[in-house]
Image 1 (cartoon, rainbow, N blue to C red):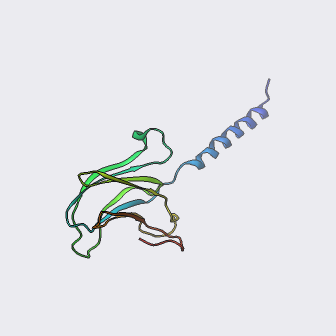
Image 2 (image 1 turned 135 degrees about the vertical axis):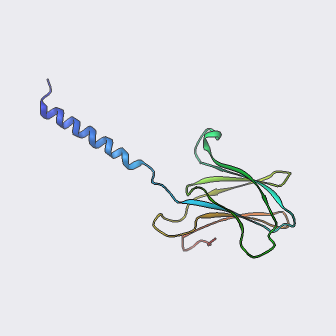
Length: 146
């Protein structure tokens, strides 16, 4: 029969093991913005989807989905923006541009630490010739800033 001391020791080990698992809980991350600069001559329909990587079921991976009408950029007030789209985590961002639904994607990886003040976001540039470019906020000294 186990002694009282054995029971207390086993309980303490179990409690420590359960508390160790608590450190794996994800901390809340700031939310990121999604911006578009449309240098084309017409309003463009844009479908946007954010997927979590490494999730086998596409429906479970989907974090954000929406469609927008993006007007041409006629002034220098800044890009068209949706704020606080999703928490700042790695994503595969897919966009579908226009009525022909030309699709493009980008693998977003957060570049800034939680304790640095920064504006988080992804910028999609739609060029007049039909090209598309993705850029993101970066904090690394060797990267471009958004």
